[in-house]
Length: 85
Image 1 (cartoon, rainbow, N blue to C red):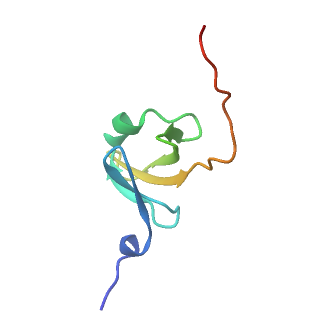
Image 2: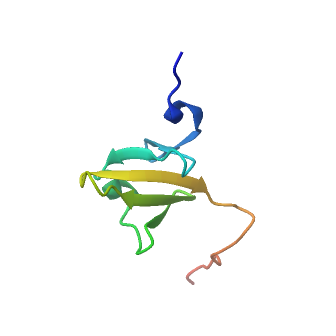
């Protein structure tokens, strides 16, 4: 009986796309998912739907990216709520 590593890790759904939760087994996806999540900053991170999405481009296949995500902690407030009067 064989087991794939992708089946052992948890996945989260971000904007209709299932993404791995761990760097040890990132999801291998087409580069077009960058349009869904937004362009990464210079470190390869995107904040999307309360998740930090990490994107690394594949060095061998230029049309593929490795993607994993972590849920942002709600106890830490990074932004101050404001209202326009």
